[in-house]
Image (cartoon, rainbow, N blue to C red):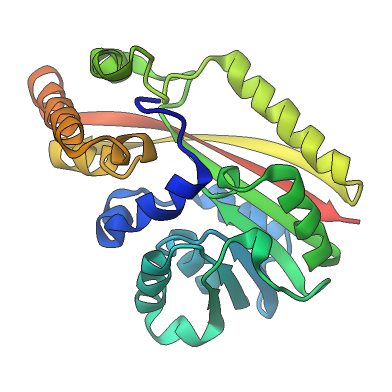
Length: 271
């Protein structure tokens, strides 16, 4: 990270500063995610779903398109919640948005066929949140959480090497996109152990999906401008970083780079 440790309190305000920019800049999720949800996890016409931290609705809109009957979306940031409601248009009536942290939300026990979290579950207290997830799911219901890593640790390539001096100058640590494989393996072990510790999940699994996006200079700046470790920088440092990452794309990569993305998804069934 380029800043001090980002707390959950900080996260509660940082992404809502500019929801429109976030929604434009962030890539969605690979189609394989939604194949898993429909073929394994019971996403179908009439399914009742809760979503933790929907943000601007990148996953929410796709869940509705693929058959979710109703979605209870628990979003702690009022600005993101307002943007989400606007972005849904005519489908807004199928989504109930609760503006509060997941751990405080009052939800019906065994009331849902599917619970999901897209790029948000790492901001919750994991084991407590998993216990609540288990209470909310019907027996046989499914839980799925997934996340995009922009900078697949196994395919980081020349662009990520080129931007390391920017991170080092700010904080003396590497880009968060360049993660040791041992760290990824530890995350897998800890996440699976957390689900097992609840004692109410079976068929626990993780799948990794490798893909990439090709971005021009302005798109790279816009994407990095949505990352929490960049958003929490003082404005002069944030401007310096985004200006220089754009300069690197222009001068060293002819104005266009391929960003490798690793999307991992955990799924588990409520026993």
